Image (cartoon, rainbow, N blue to C red):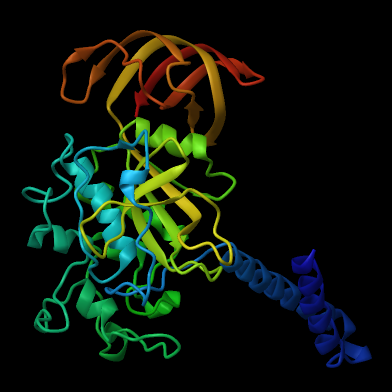
Length: 385
């Protein structure tokens, strides 16, 4: 309701301003110009609407003063944690660092083109994958600028936004080669201060970076705000061994400030995470961001890389949601509920039967129907995630 009121106010102001410039002999031309101005104003309103649905990280390499470090793990029961998720420390932004842990995890689970060498620890190759270039004490020399030199320098802070170095030095920025590039972290043109990132760019960074690292890897990534994000689909991702990126409000002031990597849950609706500031596992209540609720969640980013391709089959069972993207349909299926008959082929070339425990299936051609959460039909060519 509030958004509609101020939208109408902006449009009304545009009308009043324009009418003040009208003269009777040129009313037809003024009407045309008015329509152009109105279209322009509505574009501005729509852009502001997009911003209002987005949120940023604002924290730096050191946790805020008196930051809550979470629940005592010894008091928790029924803990489920994904094994093998590397823990990385903050590098030129919590967004690319948290996303880097997800990339590093997938690199260690059959997709080893994502990061050079061993990604289980934070090597220099890992740092370059998170945010390429140097740092304040050792920047890359002129002629070899990368993310840090182009976008993260100068290391500005709120409220004094400063043009990025590539702008002030009138040079062409480097081609994107790291997660922070694809996330548009620190870019002054995106209203990002040093280390800041937008929630809406997290899925884009996963898709962009993985496609850059190896275009043969077929990846799904999507952002879910609270409400779309539920305890059930969060746990389903963890059960499927897929770490999740969360944007949270660490200090409970009602505003987002930090990206983290969620790796587990317990039986009291708490989530486990790496916080980018140390290498410990931290536990917090799985709840919506709100004033007075430290570490409340604004949204999450899910990521899955295809485990295999199938070419023929019959599918039936329950599903919770489905979405179309181009010619593909993605169905979010309850674990073990979806039944598949057919044959397929793993990416590594080994013949396979369908694995029972998966939660996402992308179907290029689906000849069937879904009624009241139940799906039945044939499939021709798709991927299992």
